Amino acid sequence: MKRATNIGQAMVLLAGFWAVLAGLTSPGLVAVGLPVAAAVAAWAGLRLWTDDEPPVMSARQWLRFAGYCVRLVRDIVSAAVLVAEKVLDPRMPIDPVLIVHRARFGREVSRVALANSITLTPGTLTVDVDGDRFVVHCLAEGFADDIRDGTFERRIRRVFEEP
Amino acid sequence: MDSFLWGAATFLLAVASVCLYRAYRGPTVLDRVLAVNVIGTKTMVLLVLLAFVFDRPLYVDVALVYALLNFVTTVVATRYFETGALEGDWQ
Amino acid sequence: MSLFEAIRNAAAVVLVCTGSFFFLVGTLGLIRFPDFYSRTHGATKCDTVGAGSILLGLALLRGLHADVLKILAIISLVLLTSPTAGHALARAAYRTGLRPWTRLVGGGGGDAD
Image (cartoon, rainbow over all chains, first blue to last red):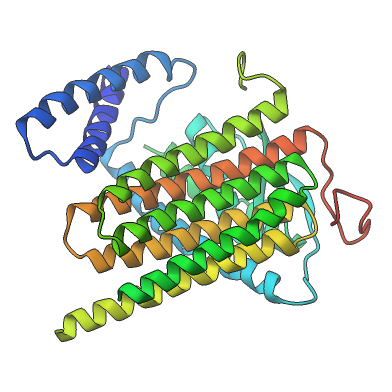
């Protein structure tokens, strides 16, 4: 049942992508696009998601996910501004460190989200993920504070782990 | 507006050629892959700009595919460098 | 040209200029930063914002058109793939034993250049 929902979600997404690419203006395009979307979704459901539970999301989760995306975009912009400051400063005031952070999640998608969030926030870059161990490169020690005290982790838990 | 977009396109081209220095200089293979990835992103944006300048909407589709290919190229080149193989267990 | 168009064009110009600025900064970072890891910082973040900003400006310029959806698809693709590519690169560097440059060790770690 869960797998069927997932294949359904993937199908809607792929059909949307096809609609954007081809523009569903003629019956011929619809006739080609929808079966292909269905076939690819079914294939992905059977072959790509066998190891891990695929991301089934409820309506509330989708809503929180949207909020999370907005916040992420804001973070990316401030991250770029910070890098700009560092680059344009002739003294190049960076003091990079590697830190190790441990975070235990129930789902694969949460780990992906945490790694991506770390990469896109100011001064930090996910270097390696191995189980619950996240190796993070920071341009300076202070940028790791939000990761260390678990702010990110809580945020991601709220989006992906709570029903 | 067209001349402004021309200017932006020229600027992007100039910036992309500056990135070539890192691709040439290295010193590690990954520096070169990173430089090529960055150039690819700029090329993709350049394609969209040119779609507007030349009024060829089809270029936007090309840019979309280019964005996908750029990502795949980077990941595959990186993975090949890391493991020395393209087949087998990728975890 | 109506007032609306003037405002829209101005906004597009600002967005394209902002994007170009971030592309320039990302490139300077690629050239100036001392080691591979910090270069990846510059490249992933500045390129994401640069590409996003320019494409958003162009989408604004196009107005209500099917192409806008394609441009938005490219933006979300960049947002999704850019950090992933950066992470893949950094991980390969880490797993093949490249040490990051640090202020203490100076040129000793990584590949100060």
